[in-house]
Image (tube, rainbow over all chains, first blue to last red; front, side):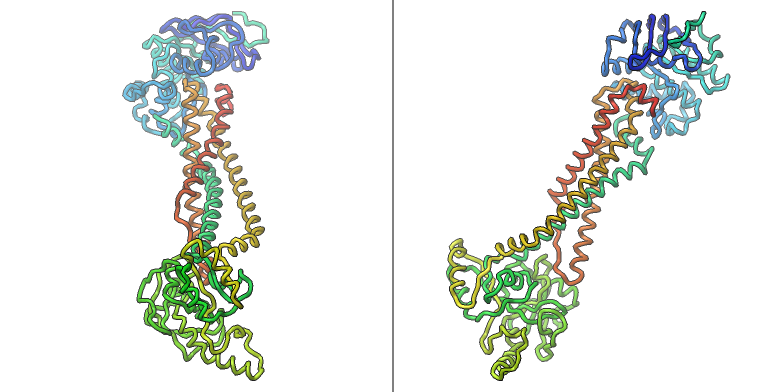
Length: 218
Length: 411
């Protein structure tokens, strides 16, 4: 589903991070580990086509991301990738439900309200569906962002530090949620984190390597 | 989830900022609306006062003064002309209408004009109450006179000598109000109309005094020098041609007669506009400058507003939004801002113009009939919308060129 090979990612041709190899099949989950500043986010953004692939290749469902540019790349991402940002990026002033429906709205596909409500209910947010997004707690907002990433049943779910600032119990539940969602919809899941608590829950772990530093011994 | 909901969320998140942006536009639109409405009101008043008058015949002197006094009722008359001139003009085949105007007195600053009921036809004046006069010393008052002096049908008043308040009162010659006119927006609103014979009657004894003074070699009231004693006179005659032939023949015919002149209101008004031209141009330049300034302010404001959308636009791109969707969003927000500011500005400008027009006529001055809301205001609104679009699209384009990841981080 996701095949990354000898990826060097950065912005404006300036390399920031390297990822030797990552293969994640449908329903599988992988952890992208590395300390803060190691370039995990840059690698994740490069996989999603939002940062530059300077070297190497990223293939999603057989599609080479390097072959897609501009609007076409945006469109592919909208259909095939669900991205959970570290900062979540819910839009204040919109209800939780509308924030989730932002995914089909932006991708230009049918907005299935019933499915979105069911998904929110599954994530324990049914009571929050019609509340403004800015009234959600951090944990609730996290789940809303996950719901938005999952609604269109993407082939690949990318999550950037989804468990940062969560306590152990919540952290475990969020990780489980992501893994279960990916498994149920047959999506590949990559979670970028420095949170070693997650390591025991994932079978595959790879390390981000900051460019310019010696390669860490695995 | 739709565009309108999303724009609504943008606005709800910073209502005050958004309100200020709209206000910036509204102020610019208001200035333009008010200036144009007042300008149209002013030139509209000129046109209305000119009514159906093609030519004014009066005593020799400045033609501009003749027009100003006999048509616009603003200046002193150039003198009087003998009554037979009126009869001569009225009987001419090239003349459709010849209306006499006799000046001399005022009541509360409003001029008493001796004329015939045909004067009302010039301005399409209709009675709000009462009737036209049927004899001397009966008066029909203009709408503004009635409002200001609180005169009604049946009221009795006396005129003061001269064309401004403070003159000698003609106590022994009271007028009776027999009719009140509906407002027309023209000069007739500020006039007291009466029969030509009323003016003669009121001034009979003066004519005699004047004659005695002349005979005795005593100094004469300078105001009365133009009154030829004994003879029946009018101040001027307002002429409407029957055909284009009249325009060719009549002025030359009049100029050939002793002590008479014929002035064209159209020519003299154009002359006046040229005289005042510099001042009007300065005013217009000022308005254009103000407009440019507010347009710039609005542009900056909208640029800032759309720049704040960079994060949201970037998020939508990461969610797969096509450029057309982002374009639609930016356009929609620009239009919403343009429509809000534009409509508020037109309401504001119209309010200011109405206020200014009322303030101008409160002091007894000429009323300023504003044109009804219409094409001009629609054009202004369209201009505001176009400006909003341009102002919204420029930062929208900049936002689209920023890589979404960078824009998200910047937010």
